[in-house]
Length: 202
Length: 249
Length: 83
Image 1 (cartoon, helix red, strand yellow):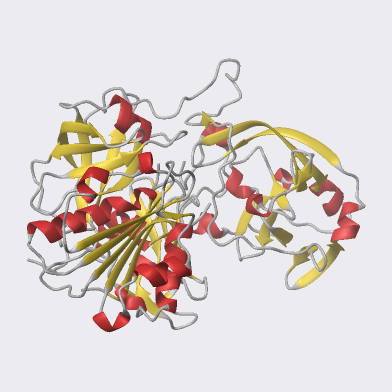
Image 2: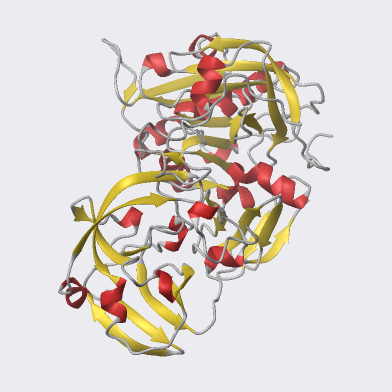
């Protein structure tokens, strides 16, 4: 039995007024922690592409300029990291993943997002469509900084933020769910913060 | 059992705080009574674990500030937005219990019986803590090795252990460099450690020096690279990187 | 945020391997570089722990604490020599 540390409270949990916006086990932060599994890639927008692939084939690909020509959305949302911090009212400039997937014919049920540096994460297709997911290139009115996933990252705020792959370069269409990087090591295949689905079996 | 790895499970145990001494405006040294302490080597660290009454836990690593044979002590620098360091430096009191495990570390250690050569110790901020353990061990064992401490600090008031470091010791040289502010009339070094300062303070490689470099990652990499550039074999430059503000805070 | 080094996971390694491992020598399967684990590049809270080769940045080890167990991936090491 660990002794209770007298007077230790850890970080403050839920600020007044934020009840209902903070999933169980989370605390609200005003900063934006930078967490990464590796060195920050620095990918120039010239030469950057975003691809939808299936099997070994590229079904559709956009250059940076082509992607930026698509309708831009301003997204204000709360984000929740599995390491227990939540950040409320974050502002992003992004293209809806619906806009990208609409241009591709497919019958996939899952996607595997893949990024510069080798990171991957899996999601059900229905969780990256229906206005729930974006390709985000702007943060708080400026270009998304490299340390936060720029030039562009996936943004899927209704799931734990490890699913919002930084430095994303595409989505691989899958018929069956396949674990990505952290899912392979025991993190939850789905990751709903409201059900505290941090690990496999939760 | 000098020089052997610590075998067997590393278990958490409950220690009692016996004394807390402020060192600077931000840093305090905390002394523990640890019932099953197996002893430690200069340069090692321990892990501390705090548990809130709702079961929430936080864990951090701190270098041991005391020498082998002295009561176990750590020196903690309070970080503005830290979660654990403000608790340890402002809330904790003698008599409180705390969970810790250790000692930990088999690489960043100095063993006076087997490690030979003049010591070059380079500290960036709170990186001085494990180096102070080395200096105290050097003193306690009556080591004949000469030592030089290059200590980079924001300002003179931020220097930890200043009185102790200024005690006369013919075999020890302390060189400060102050990076943010200097007292009036300061004639010592200013600004970050650069190759020129390293060339000035580093023992010549012909003397077989052993270097220990500890502090923020950027400090450690600049100094380690500089020493290797001066001809120090990489195996003779031991490094320990703390988080940007001094270890996991 | 700057990454740390293998010293920062001394406790974790001891827990997993049952012994002090920071001075163990690891050989990268990708570039063949050998060095003490203490010198490897460590990314903490990623959410798990990722240990990379200082020479080529390839992943050497991954540790994920899932409930009360550790999931450990050592495929990035060709050899790990401990005392």
